[in-house]
Image (cartoon, rainbow, N blue to C red):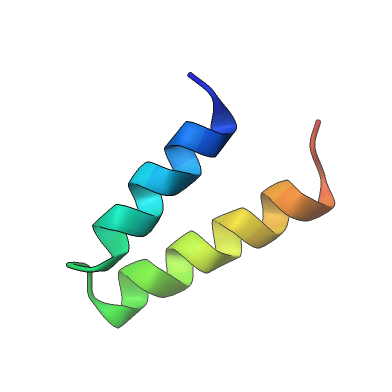
Length: 37
């Protein structure tokens, strides 16, 4: 599964998640952006 596709799906899901879930998502994206190993 392509990362780009997963990010799009996650962003779509953000419309219905709580602020804590949103924070978890942004945190995960930040980790992926800084360390792709």
